[in-house]
Length: 73
Image 1 (tube, one colour):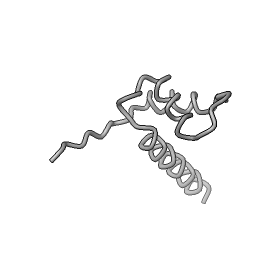
Image 2 (cartoon, rainbow, N blue to C red):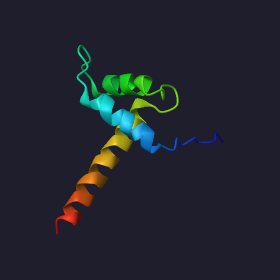
Image 3 (spheres, rainbow, N blue to C red):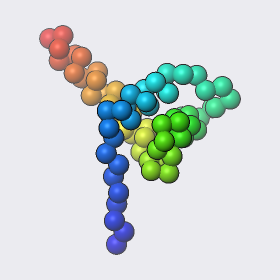
């Protein structure tokens, strides 16, 4: 059986990823490619796969939207 390593994202990682995803990536066409570039830019290439980063990002966006809706009720 292989041990599964789960990277614990820091607040700094999330801030770097957010900044990187806001910038246009000329010539990069797929989401996975963009996420691969972001991971490289923030120093997580080889630590986190683009697929896992994408899932994390979607989870963060959902959590943010839900917290915003809860604050407005």
